[in-house]
Length: 113
Length: 113
Image (cartoon, rainbow over all chains, first blue to last red; front, side, top):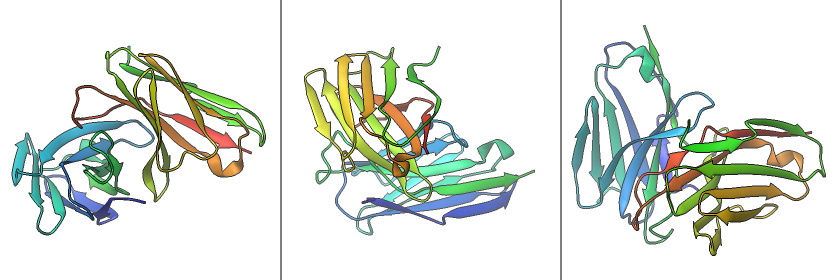
């Protein structure tokens, strides 16, 4: 069963616009990670936010975490066509064991030129 | 050369055949994982290994077996393939003692006819 559920399932925007993806999870977590997957390729780690952190930045990426609502959001600012990919959140929690990640179902992002 | 290499990248086989997917890594990581990806279901954990002598079942281990031949090698076997094992399979590695980022291979696409 999935721990994380991403919303929306698909998102289509124009270059230069911001893209926001949300992730909700069910149990207490140790950390939450976001990954990117280009079509049919391996996943690439983007950013990790720990349970005691509320916001984190990396380049054009901004991640927030609200543990009271069990949710996280990934914001990509000034999107580019090259950002077209699927984005997955993944959680590490005491319930699943700290050394395992449980992935959500992903958000497909399409950025049009 | 890729840090995490999976072979074969694509395989078509018939029901009942034995199939082995291989994974090797040059990152020196102790932890290795096999995930399966199906459309709309995200990634699901099949097996994981924290070192050569430690192998654990994931959420969907039925019908699969693994072998950790060395720190750098982790193989996934389907003893008698069936059509619903058609999927994209990913090997991943992680270092350190706490849940950090996973490093993924490029995937092995398996089709069982």
